[in-house]
Image (cartoon, rainbow, N blue to C red; front, top):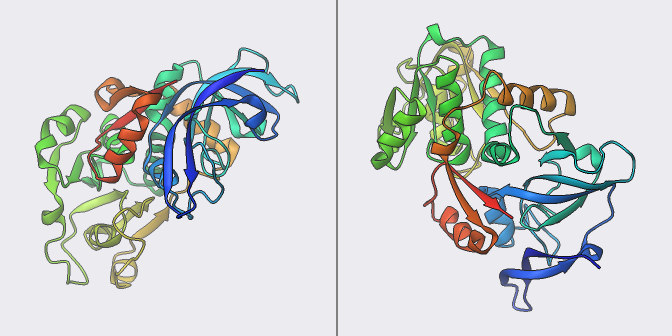
Length: 329
């Protein structure tokens, strides 16, 4: 019987949650058509919520988080993949209520997996991961809306986080002038390395937050945190611009008047990477492996082992992580 290591989150009788590395068996995995030996995963904010028992993310325990996984096919019951194929899995139910990438093996439906594009290694695919894929969808949303580099600056909120940092780099690579908004001004060199043209603080963005409209400052924005930061981004977007929305770490509430929408024609674009249909999913992975491939992937990344994941979960909940943290299984 094959056994493997995994991070296991358990619910205690007093309704607290504990986590630790334990030995699991393939028999512990759910039914599925695809068995994958995981080589790399990554740490996302949603993983931290799952690892601390947030019922909006994970409801069934014991549980192994990890919403990202990249690895090698061990077996496939429906011949969608063959043994030895390299695959990427992000989104769907992986790491939420299905055991995820913080284990050395996963078993999933084969239609959750994407064949790794030739332009990426498994490691690079997890530097991108759900965060980078979400950033890519956000940039694609702006581009398809007609936002072009000649129209002005693009604001990125939560720019030190996984989605924000990749969004800064992708926008810069696409030729946009990027304004990175952060609560960590000491990371200026990090943003400049990613290609940001300017760095502003959260306090600067939140100036005059009581006003229903602000000066037209941005051609568009990628908001990763929600709440009043998203409100300010909408109010400061110029006529015909667009703002993408993909996060809620600041707040799930949106307090903004209709004025930016009916007086400036600003569009709010919702971004979901979990249930993104397979055709656009495949197209975006091809872009991320090709014309949008980032040369600064290593600058974004810290690599840790499975033994380090619990510590990094604590750090991401405290807002202490920047860029991307990948896990080598």
